Image (cartoon, rainbow, N blue to C red; front, side, top):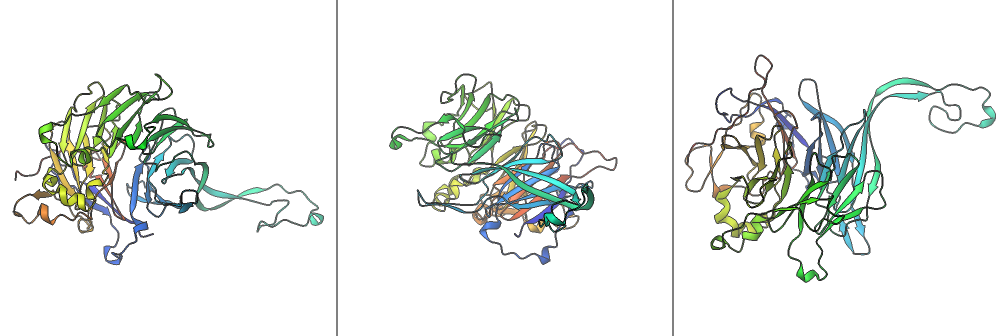
Length: 468
């Protein structure tokens, strides 16, 4: 597996606005020694911090999970690597099931071991990741190599003892949740009660208990009696961070529904629906496609919903359904390119979004290995690039700008020269600190605040790029 880790420090200036010079790497791989070639199995398909931010897990299209641990000096190093899923074949449907990891979700820690859920298109697995630095020696019925002794030769009883050994990190599957989805699983979410979780496919959402693998409860079912009447599919589902009875799911029509499980067992009737009505005069062939919601995230406070569609990212107040309280254009310059994006299938790319720990800044990905940050207070934004070129010792990330017309500066990029094969689909933000993880194909970039001389973090605010 050729996973490349790039880490750095985000430089935040103590001014009334954030100067978007964001990278000064503290950990960099030797780029000259890295081969540029990689296989499709090496492409990262999900990124997720745990609840404390000490661990960061990535899954790839080859079914592997790589866990990074934060060291005392702040760097993230590989902690454990294991094969989570293998390719399978459904003989009843003559269907190949890919090993690609669609989602990873950490369970809240309750003991020294760590637990996480990982899923491919059909099967969800619960993994236990634990450390072992001692081993037992002096068994009565087995020798040191584990083979059974001849019982006739055992004449004394000895007490096994624990001997120190090199630290070993073990990943073992504890539960396998399978055979509950007829369609591809697109999301999983752990409930705040720490006992249940949901899994969603195109038409159904199931509720599982973490200790029960042979059955689940269907809580949302959008499948019509006649499939020709199908008008929308579920794209993503998420539990509320504090209220175990609330969940939200979005659909391909651009709507996001809030469901309350206290009302009824089957949540087909939503409690609230968040939808922005499109002006009929502005409708086009691509309107419904670009309005499909690819990701939804509750804010840490639980007050807001963050949704990402193809062109925008929106913030919704749970108390106001008719329109979002904030709308940010991610790459509005692509509106004139929708036809070619449709022909290349790029218009169906599913971008994720993330909140920072205080819900004050939003992050999401774009093309050309660009990612965007939006400051909610100042309504300013910045475009930054995650690429191998910026990962140099003491280098600084410079803001990028995409121009619709002719290229004006050396740092500007014309919309016609964007590389749509390079895309930032998966992002994650540390739950407490300004540390972000960016996945770009098989590369993982980690950026972190630069500490001031007194050891404090600067306040992150964002300055918009120069006017076009």
